[in-house]
Image (cartoon, rainbow over all chains, first blue to last red):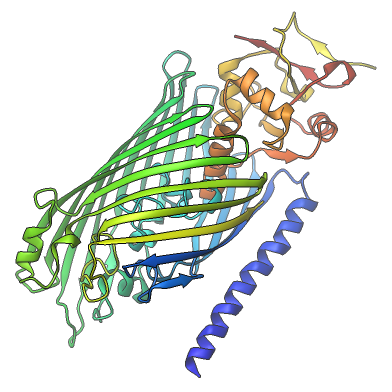
Length: 405
Length: 132
């Protein structure tokens, strides 16, 4: 009975989202002249088949848990002030918590504007726009593939990495000879509910995890008339876990720092992207009161896209991730866990091939195949599950149809 | 009365850039035009907010304008606009369905900018001279 009710709630949620998108799509088309008020949205449904891991669910086989629906609005209520908000419904199985969320809900103040400089201050719930794909990570048609490289865009951290409640400053500078410079700074905190905690920590965690203020900075440079763009991003965040009296875990503190450098080449037919990362993950307590671990992880992805014609684009990517750069094979991890956690939980590398085909300017299908080695980016990441993820090598494929307006 | 304002002899482009007469700008550089279309310049020199109208990215006039005038590929602009639209950090241009609709929108919207293939048939707009 309760399973049936849960299923009905899920279906109702999806139907409501779809109805919302269809209604607002009509409004958006009817009211093109209302320049101060904009509505956009998207609907995407796919099938995904994972063989050999719990990336999407604990059972092998075809799954429809690849749904993304979103709706956003922007309303300019004064010359320099604008309100913007976006809600999304996501279902990705074990990848993140299924349901509705508000991605951003903010006030934008265009504080200064000239032909060279532009300064904007955003206050409210801000979306992370620092990394190469962070602002479009769950916008199906605006990201390069159905699944993003998990080294940098680990789905388990999606809701934490998506942004938070706080403020952001965006500064654009244009130089006639040296090109365009973007400077972004944000400070905020994300809300982590018990379902998010379960996805990241495991269902054994009875306590609460809280995100303290995090700070992020990014700088981008686009040389004048160049096909290249370069970026540098820095993130510093802290989390605290308050254990319950009868809890598998004790109080703990996590520090997560994340640095990336990226380069993007945008040619007429070829496009190349690389994003190199280093993470610092400090754990104090949590497993036991005296526990202390300070790991530096490393990784990076290399991606090539080729536009065959206006409709068809081919994509290939290799993504590497090491949870601890001093234990790339994971032997120490296995030793420290007395053999409970296999060494392949120390890394995750993913080779991917795929394509996208545009039927019209706002209807596309994406398809891709992944060959994965390792399990370092499988939920729950804090307490790995080697019983389900009992293979070093696993594979998956996905096809997703998407519409947007 | 035909008020096509020609300021000097514009560089020949397959696609011409037009603005609403309120923009009060006679010429523009390609770099400036790129800034406007990538939403990095949101006001004209006289302080009037810029409103951009474009055709769909699959339209051949839009493709010509991107490649020949802006020296950008249409997908690069789509990417910038999608990033702004779906992160809440900005507003993308308004897409209109035909060149006729685009001209009408530029004529009637203060601070508007757009492009057309045949300037001879258009009145009451400002034709921009594009300096390299």
